Each structure stands twice: as structure tokens, then as C-alpha cells.
Length: 238
Image (tube, rainbow, N blue to C red; front, side, top):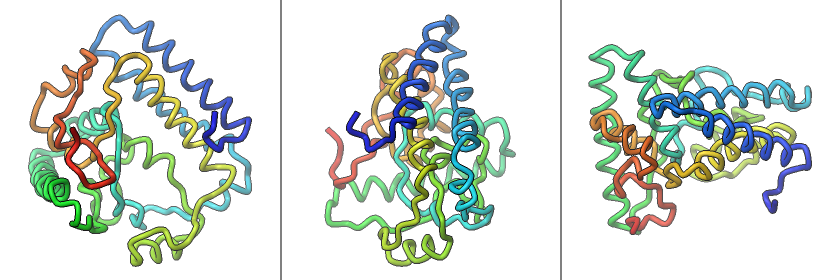
């Protein structure tokens, strides 16, 4: 691989791909497929626990900081569906209604960005961020699980600057977490599931207002419409 992984991280990536693919092949009930991915997310916890002690000790992330929750979040369809499932089983009707409204506003802004390449996407809070903390922490996407910082001050500086001005990556941890994330994504794609990257806020709005999204995913079709797809160049996806 030309991923920049160490040998151990590369082994973790391939082990993750193989394990998730094997479980997906053994799953006969389509309704249980998403549970396989959800179970695979436990690999992040194992990867963290087995990282070098110094790397784990360097983590500055704490509940309530929320700085990284102001970045664009590109996710896979299965991550959106797991997030939506968590919302639907844990949120009150009033909280669900409020989230759908925030997600709708986000989706409108994201659509405007896609039709106007000159428009600069601001550093806005994730629609799931409430009082500085993730409201679906146990159901959060892989990229959110994989990200750790060695400096809250550095994160605050980066947020204020609008770009990565300070390197807050943690060597010995970041690669392991990304190996798990990419391994899960690759296993799902290899099994024929939706391979598109989606904007989290836009796709979450669709998932919470359209029950067909999960059905399409189980059928190995694109789960969300093209206007929900992530596009770093600011152009509407084809």
C-alpha cells in the first residue's frame, strides 16, 4: 500500500478488511448487515487500547471541547445510517424535530456551495454538536472516532485560522485509527455497498426524512441523492 502506514498499521488495515468482509458474507438477513458494520466500530476501541502508551497519553481531547466538530465531515453511507439509527432510538420527538431542522438548514447551505464554486464554506458546528459535545457519541462516524489531537490550543488556533495551521496529529495513534476506518470502508465497498462519500449533515437529513435510504443501501444501491455527496472542489457531483 502507498498509504503511509507502518507495517503494523498496514496489518491492522488488512485484518480489518478481512474480518468485516467475512462477517458480511455470513450475514443472511439483509436487516442485520448494518449491525455488522456497527459491531466493527469496536475495532476503534481495540486499536486505541493497543496503541503505544505515550501516544495515548498525548491525547488532549476532552468532552466539551468540540473544535474538530466544526470541520466538514465526509462519511460513507453506512456511517450516516448508523448515526440516523442512533438518533431515532435515543432522541425525544422534540430533539429529533430540532435536529431535522438544523440538518435541513445545513443541507440548503451545502447545496448553495455546490452551485457556486467561489463560495467559501465556513467553519460551522456539526448539526449533531450540542453544548460542545457530540449528541450521538456512541453512534458517531468513523472519522470522528479516528481523530485525536495533542493540543486543544492548537485546535483552537486552527479553528480560528480556518485551516490546519498547527500540527496536532498524534504519531502512533492516528495511523492505527485510520487503518480501522479505511478497513471497514474498504470491506463494505468490496461487498458491493454504496462507495460514495457523503456530506454528513446533508445525508443525515435525507436519512431522517426518507426511510428508503436504508433499504437502498441494503440492496447495494446508492443510499442518498447526488446533492448529498461530498465534493471537495465545490462543484456539483455528476
